[in-house]
Length: 372
Image (cartoon, rainbow, N blue to C red; front, side):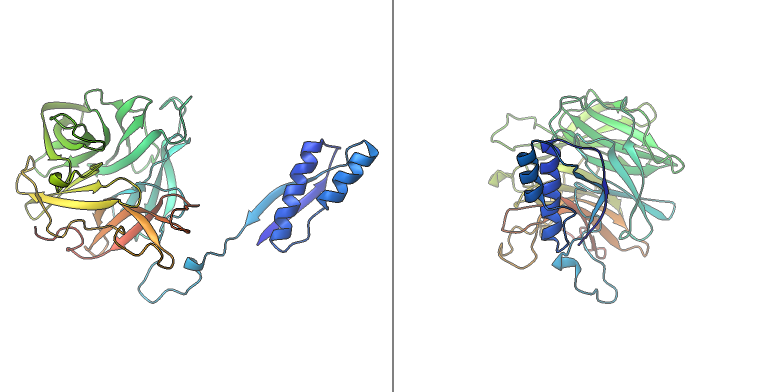
């Protein structure tokens, strides 16, 4: 369904007539009468040797008819995705009775939108972590480079977004307050390689930074990566002390798992829970979790890993959701655990018009914290 407003204006060029013709075809496809028939106009212009005035559109609105959104919702349910279309790698945190979410934007500007919610389902944008050209330089980058998988945290009145600017500076942290939802200038982390940094604030006052990088041992295969941990002085934004590998390869290193990344660390009832994406962000994507009594490990995998994936489902199922992973966890308004994660709504097995979107899953304390 579309709406249009038209106006006649000065004579245009043949290219403009062609554009008007395309618009007319779009309107016809939507069941509306075109403002001017494209073919006769082009023919008349050719016969007379002069251009006719094309039709200009002041706006063009489109309303989709997605079968996934047509069915009514049962009581107590919510509809996924909670943020549709190009909201990849969602990370979430709680602050002052509300929830805040950030997502990847790659080389698009402004970057890293910041969303606010009271229920983890309905979100409104309140700012951007990257909102001034001087913060990051995306000039010359391909659209799939730039900012990957931001991780948002909240501690002592300040928001922290840890992120990677791929091929344009490396890893960094930006900060903001509740009153100022857009980020300040980046604090660069030259000693932290790889991608996907995140912060963990322990209850003893120490702060740690996690990230994906190459392992200590030689890389054995394409996609062989590790999760690293190091302490960081959050006031100066400078890591210090030893760095240690928490996971080498993945939860089953004997199977050569690929792309362990997107690490998040939580502490619940004296246990440290380490949650990571594994398998790449395509159809083999998944989320795994491990736990330890010590922040430095060793970490024991959950016996039910992966805790989130769609890779074993029938690819020909109706209204498929695929590529699920890159999850972050937060406790909801009632104390239950929720996950935000990326996934795709595909058709024809491997076609994705809306990209990687932000989904949510509501559960209880078993959603990711089951005993190994």
